Length: 554
Image (cartoon, rainbow, N blue to C red; front, side):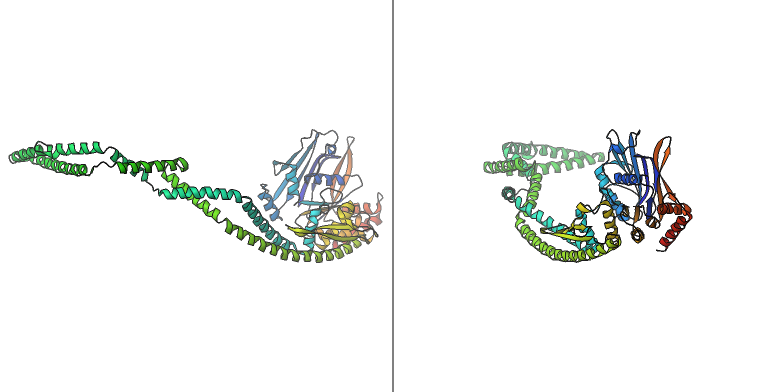
């Protein structure tokens, strides 16, 4: 709800701070005292048009601050948080209008745009009167209001969920069909690449193996010569290293019998002999296996060539090539499954459309039945609000294709005078009539997502017993939402949970507006003034007390 409003340098308002309460807040005062300026200030908070003409004479800028209490509206607070606006149960909005045109908006202390302000304020306050923020003036809201009365909001939400699924499936199918030619080209390319890589039968470590084998074949003669020479030097004849070493070992073994300290040397020499003998035999076998094979060398060169060509196309090494092949194989699986996907989407769209048709018919039937009940209820309520001959109807426009809200648009039609055909409500209803229309609608369907309602001119053209009935109806609405109402009728003011008097004061030759909270006899005096004008008598005071007491028992 709106908890506090602070206005500076707006029209005839110098500085004004107003605190509002839950329930019914009534604003009264003489004509021209500044009540409409307070509504203008709230309209600025709702993102309404700002003009430098609103700035008080002699000031460079005007500002309006509003503090909202959202502790009773956790869903609204959560919605704001999802939009990036943290409010922690309270929301502070500030609007500054400058003569230089540098108008600024602050939401919870951060800079914002007017568009952002207008977006979030839709969930905070609705004004019913001669202002742009009229719910009833927005035709796109008529169907939602009708659904609220008809009890079809859940049905509408179910329809919207199916519609979104329907649109999503249609979009996917359209994208699939639009990309058909490109997909075919892509399929051909990837198929060729996949086959080329698979046919190559690459494996990790193959390049290293090929390089090693090719090195051996390319240097076969050198390897044969080196291994044979080494074998001859080690083992080839008596002059070879092993023959000489054997004689050395025999000599050391002989003298080690004289001196046992040479025994370890003899053992080491025996070990070295055994290792050299093994190495020489290995060299002999290696030399025997070395052979020139020009055919195999050519095969190796061809294989290395083929791998290098694949590397130029698909990756820096075999690992990258194989990784690329895995990727295109996955993409191929998706592309080759397009036909199956198309069939699935086509069937899903047909099923969803059938479901939309079924749900849409139920929704249409509920709306038309609700429209009949709404007409009866609205005309009854309007007759009680001194509009006995008013006609209220709902016009439906069928749609060939469904929208998120169903298979039809709806618009409220209204005729305030007998003999006049109902016309679009937004074009024919005055500010006072709009207030009464919304007040009547709230009697029939009091629940609302908006925590604060402002009624301006709801009592225009009303008098007598109807005046008290307006107060009863406002009080009923205020049981579910905070209500701010400007009235000139004492019978309405008597129902206030909080009574605020707006008046003008002159100081240092300047006129300014102030607001006084009335209680007890002060409130009685104000109601008496509204009853009897400037002259307040004991009789009018007594009448005022009676009105307040009677209202308290309603």
